[in-house]
Length: 107
Image 1: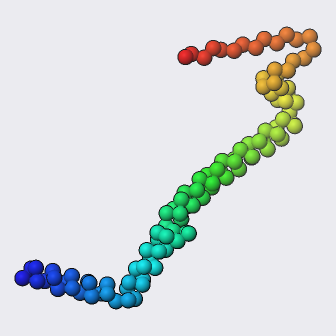
Image 2 (image 1 turned 135 degrees about the horizontal axis):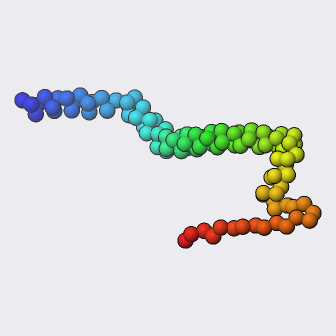
Image 3 (image 1 turned 45 degrees about the horizontal axis):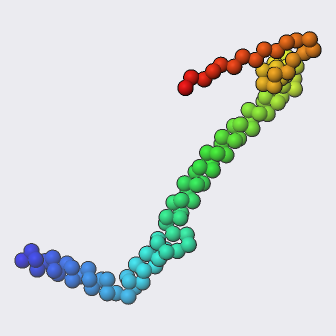
């Protein structure tokens, strides 16, 4: 009895799949998801790339704002400009002796 019910259910499902509209719809869905130029896998990769680019944009926007603040700060404060020149570029005044101490990194 149970086998007969399952066969009837399978017969209905198989009958539904014999319909040309169902077959066409399934073929179109498979084509769009797997074989099209903009298939589901490509869309997922593009979505991940877009999210990465949004993160990069936020990072660089933050960096640009930081650089603008530092530029303004250096233009308005000559002592800060001198400190930066001495620390980063090892500049010195006339008559000064500059000692650069480098720590050895541990291996």
